[in-house]
Length: 226
Image 1 (spheres, rainbow, N blue to C red):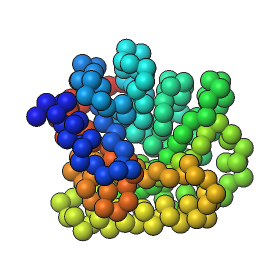
Image 2 (tube, rainbow, N blue to C red):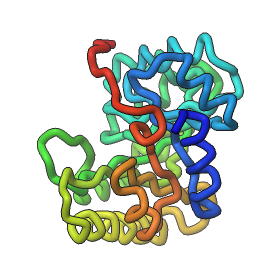
Image 3 (cartoon, rainbow, N blue to C red):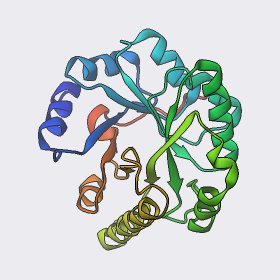
Image 4 (cartoon, rainbow, N blue to C red):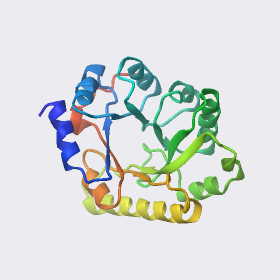
């Protein structure tokens, strides 16, 4: 199927309340434009400079979601326009986002990335680090960031039971954090988990955002270095 047909498929099949993040990393702007013309407005990128460059030439009503590991020296490139950063994994990164957001007069929505797969190739905080961050007095001073939920990436495995268990556990962590720290905050409501191969399991376990790329745009070219 074409990119437009793939977009239409997900838009019509995802349950109400689940947002489709079209993961367009490494893909040319022409492919993104096809998805945009099919009605897609939420796009996910994992390289700051690539996302900045695409933002400059594509329609300005696109909501850009940063989903990759974010280095502090790249924060300044995306804060002026990013809709949400899914992959915050430290207080240091939050402080940098807050600093750049102040310069732009913005409040930037962020998700805290939790390490649920425990694989060396994946980033994210442990549950202990998550608790330390949320209990840290410095966090309350960061008025230009808004914590909206959690994000996680499942293991690379063919075992559905393992993936289901990881997503289920992340939902339990989300519920616990919501009750303890954000009970009166309506905006703490997002759980970003699930990709092309496991999004159905993620939705089953409570995902509100699925990050789907290859099933929409096809296989990726990882030769881009920025």
